[in-house]
Every structure is written in C-alpha cells, then in structure tokens.
Image 1: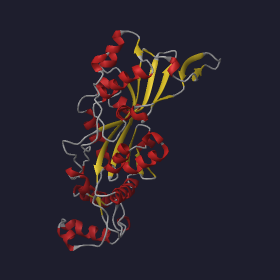
Image 2 (image 1 turned 180 degrees about the horizontal axis):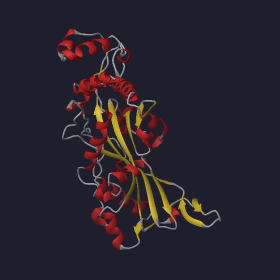
Image 3 (image 1 turned 90 degrees about the horizontal axis):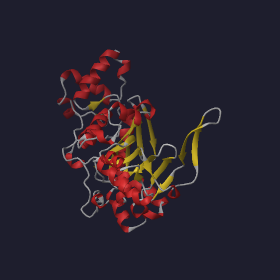
Image 4 (image 1 turned 45 degrees about the vertical axis):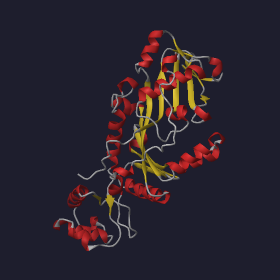
Length: 357
C-alpha cells in the first residue's frame, strides 16, 4: 500500500516532556513560596504542591516549569528538555533517558536537587522517572515558506475528512482523536512559530537565534504528543522503558495514522486515466468533474472505490478542487525532504558533567 515511509537516517526529535521523580530533596528557597493543596471535605490537608517556578535554561531560553510535592518529596518537571539544555528545540535528541538525566544534573545547580540517598540516585540514573507527556517531532524541509503554508492548508483539509477533532490555529494544524485526551498530532510551520516567540521573548534576540529562525523558514514540523494514558497503554510511562529505537517506532506508529495521500484536483488528463485500471476510470472521471459519488453509487460501492484508490495513493474522501493540489504523499516520501541540522549549529554535550558529580 502507498504510504509515507521515512528514510532510515531520519532524525526523531524529543521536544516537550513532563516527568516526575520521587524521593527528591530541593532548596525550597529556590522555588516559589506559594502552593496549592488538596483537602478533604472536613478541611484535612491531603497533599501540598508548590505553584510553578520557572527555571531559566541555557542562554535564558526554554524555561522549565518546576513544581514540588511538599509532603511527598516529588519533583515535577515540564518543558522542552533539550531546549533547556541547548537553547534550541529544533534539532534535539531521540535518547529520552540521556536527556532527562542531563536535565536532572543541571537542576542540581539550579535548585540544589539531590536524592534522599545514593540508592535513589541510582534509580534515577537507571530511568526510574515517571512520564506524563512526551512529544516527538520530525522536521520536513520544503522549497519555500509559501510551500510549507500550502502543505498545511491542504493537510488540514484532508484531516477534516477523517472524522476526528481537527482545528487550525494560525500556521498550525491539530488532529486530535478523542479530543486529544490520549494523544494529538500537530503539524506547523516551525519558522513562523519561532518568529512569534521571538517577538515576545527578549532573550531570543541574538544573531545566532535569528540565523536558526532563517534556517527553519521552510520547515514543516510534524509532532506527536503522547499523554499519560497513552504512555501507560504503550508501556512507556517510565523512562527506563524507552530504548534506542523507541522514539522512531512511536513516531512511525502514530504518523501512519494520518494516512497522508494525494488528492484529486485540476483538469482531467488522459495520461492520468491511462495509468488507472479500467474499472476505476469512470469514478475517477466523475470525481475530477467535482461530482458527488454518493448521489450515483451505493455506500458499499463507494467504500470499495475508496479502498482501491487508497492502494494507489489517492484519497477520494477529500473533495476535488479546480486549483491544482500538492501531491503530499509523493512529496513526503522523498528522502531528501528530511531536514538535517546546519553544520554551524552547536549541539550541547549531554554527558558533559556526568562524571563530575
């Protein structure tokens, strides 16, 4: 069956992560002195958790959101982990354990994080880190910013036909089965997103970051967001369960659910008909005229046609339009579409301080 198969050297980028660790001690003076609490109907306090404290990352970018369970000694961390370490979250890492442990090492200095005892530290190092959310992304590079925006527009139109919740926000398209309670897939123009953030955040105004924004001007980013219930379902709710190829396998599994195919548009061409089996030429011609097959064929027949056209890489659920559409399936199957980090981009050494503590 025609589908988008990503090349072997595709870089899978872990972005936003929400995790927690137990038996953690911190310097509470480094955190906010306000907190929220859970109580019984009688007013008995069951649990207290500090309100969020924002911890600046490298070059004061990509702050981490930190909360601390006062009664449970649990540390809650949320944010773009690699961005916190390396001042950018475009090109990151697929090694979740390595990234999480590097963040914990940096928090030793930021909030004086330490385990209750040495055995707990060994547990953290081995991946006893509980996950509430993990985002995995792939960067696709196109010829220009305008092509990226056209791809997003067309992708949104196709996803709207799939039946699940779909919404557009600026230059982003979200597909959210079950309203995104378990997982969500987002496609967006990475350069546009960075420009919007840059206009609000003074810390990002530097030549190097602007150079990175320029590099991303023609990048479409597709991101899989897995929430806790889905991570539990996949047996990936702790970092120790993530292996070297987990990010790859998970991304492919959910990316394939988008079923990105080519759609019908433009005038009917004889060369197109000649490539089709004879039994598909009449419905193809009708669709290329803009006719609605529901008025001409039984439901079962239409379902049969959808299956046969899907095997040819064509989605007939998306209505025909006169303006020529982009061949999304063809474009995304091109192995040269995967964006690689520029040679000038400096990546952080995630193990830099590993042996110093």
